[in-house]
Image (cartoon, rainbow, N blue to C red):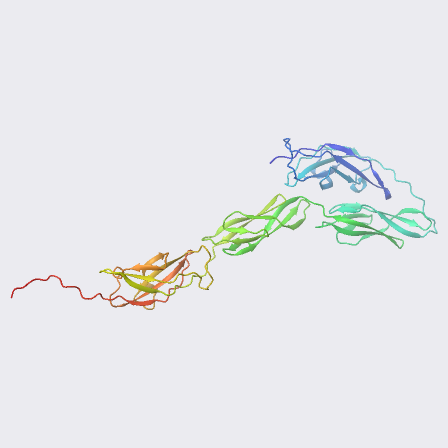
Length: 435
């Protein structure tokens, strides 16, 4: 695996933007990364995201790093030194890394030093007249905040004498998608789609509001987990689902591309696995692929004992089909095409037959003698003499069907048949006697 280009080239810190109530923002930027460390370009269409940190440790120790922004798709980000807790007049260091959607990360960029400027508070506006009445409250701050991020809000009041000044209101917001502190810092929760919240400032019986969008910021998929049954009976089905985990720790159901690695099963685009017929337990791997990440689950296709095949019907005997001292007779029957429960046999199933004769009308197992076994057709020919069938005494003929799984049907209803005597033997050894 190639490594992402080792570091970024910092461009610098842009000028501060003054905000009410002595808040400020600064913008830091850097050159984009477009190659791996060996100089080859990163593939077109592969998302390149940045994570930016600051620290007071020029050695950039991992424990000292504080995050300014994650999963940034642009080469700039803004921050408020006060909100970040940067000491005014002190030196801090910026660093950043590249994170691809495959999880590959670059090394940290070289430390970029910056002296946090000391900012003089803006002049305080004159207080309103002691007899003035507050007529309105205005709320200022960002109109959108990324999920997991924060934004600072301030308020100013306008009095009936025309004066305006900053105020310290009571802050509130109206949803479960964010919280706001007493100082006006709104913290956004994780969301699965953009959500609107209303920030409200209340002061001296007046309120002001600002509509804010909590943005469902795209993250980088870190892993995919597959859920579903660990085994499926042959001929059966099982449903599988996938959950993605992102680099910010959030999880959500995803719709991946499904695949299975063996001919013993197939899986639909919706994650429904259909097991084929097997003659022994087989293991397959179900794979879910999403945003360059894959998750797998091992599944056993179970060789489930099937329903017995139906019993053979309509046994009949014809012959002799050849004459002579060793006559040949044919035993025939109808083919078996269903299970014992009348359900049709699946395409591709094979049925063979075993034929027996016995002198016991009850067809006791110990009395059965095979005429033929594993017969693929619905007839068998035999010679009574070769089978040692007694002449002029009843014999009982029966057949059973056997599936390719080895499952056997019950014995068919027998037919009674008598091996006929062929008549007296001709005279032998004649001589002529003279009288």
